[in-house]
Amino acid sequence: MKKVKKGLMKPMMTMLLNSMSVLGLSQDTIIMSDNTHRVSKVLEINETEIKYKRFDNIDGPEYLIAKGNI
Image (cartoon, rainbow, N blue to C red; front, side, top):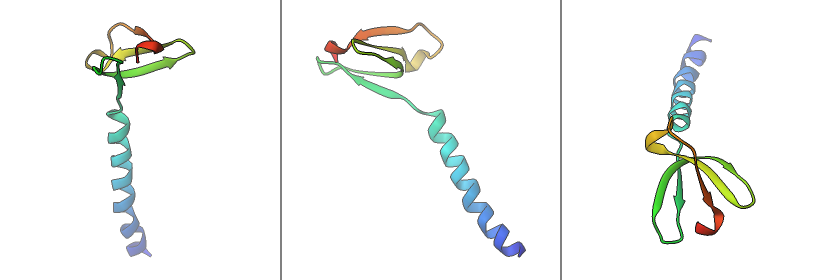
């Protein structure tokens, strides 16, 4: 019995650590109509605009951009 539990523990821990690393590094890339890229964290999307924070300053101000510029 102990070999079965021990054999499952390593893959489960690997999956847990991998999923934590993916969640911690989530980022979005907004591609503008002039082909510039903005690495950001999108907070909200509504019918006319997108609210985001710059990824290099997550604690900074929120930015709004019109969907027509994307």
